Amino acid sequence: MSKMLASLSLDLDNKWSYMKTHGDAGWESFPSYLDLVVPRVLRVLEDRGLKITFFVVGQDAVLEENHAALRMLSDAGHEIGNHSFHHEPWLHLYSEQEICEEFTRAEEAIEQATGCRPRGFRGPGFSFSPAVLSELASRGYRYDASTFPTFLGPIARMYYFFTANLSREERAERKQLFGNFREGFRPLRPYLWKNLPGEVLEIPVTTMPLLKIPIHVSYLLYLAQFSRPLALLYCRMAFSLCRVFRVEPSLLLHPLDFMGCDDDNDLAFFPAMRNPAEEKIDFVCQVLDLMQRQFEIIPMAEHAKIAIERLAPQTMSPPLGTHAETSSGRGDAS
Image (tube, rainbow, N blue to C red; front, side, top):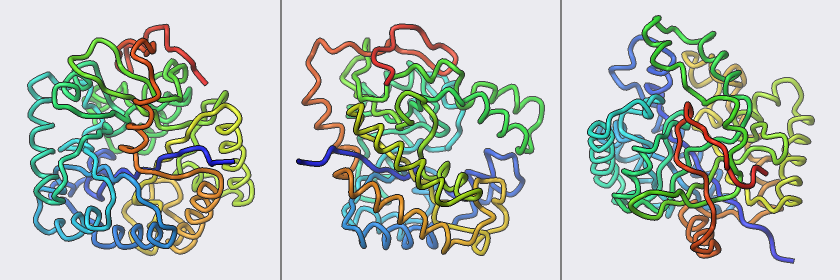
């Protein structure tokens, strides 16, 4: 019996972007760990013969000192996606003109650094809006990957506000981060957005079918701090439910999944960053091996191509909406 498909991606958030979102001083100098983390990730993927999607931030791509690390990704045959230019999780608050400028700058910088012009997008902090989706369609993007169907968005936002060093104005600006409870009713399977000037497929970041709780690797690493066997059991259960409900998972990685306290002490607020890198990488490898045994792992562009071919023209899809504007009629929520 052939394996179900699955896609794998990594949001290449850099050190400065975490510091900026967390409200830490010094991010304006754009401190970077790309030279450290990119070779580690590529070794893990090469050992398994995997090709995945890397969502690159334009601000990193515009800096010459990052070009060698970023070029390694495309030279190794991985897909390059767009993760915005400024990496601001409040992208859904941008005006149409600001969105246009954000995409133009990001695309030009990413193409110059990697030789690839992205045709897939993920908003920082899973941020999106009708204006963002319309811009994607106008620019000919094949897919968006910014929805995160979970009921736990408000809890994630509470944790973020509790740990971040934010002013009252910054808290007000970011009050919609990670979405609301209704995000959990969004579908897990790919679908086409309606009412756009072009065809844009949505590939949600997969959460556990039925329960809609996270299964991305950073969350699994967080659970592994308490019990590694239980975290792996949780992962197995999630993959099993995906197979039962015929959900082809799209699993998400972050750079800090491959880094630990022995690499950087400034990012201790991120899940599992108090653990050593070797321990974390070993766990990530176990998750990827488990996933690879059950699914055929492909980059997101290939996943999108296959999903679009499967979808009939009359396929219903959710209406446009932001984290703050979630209407009913979401289709299949499993």
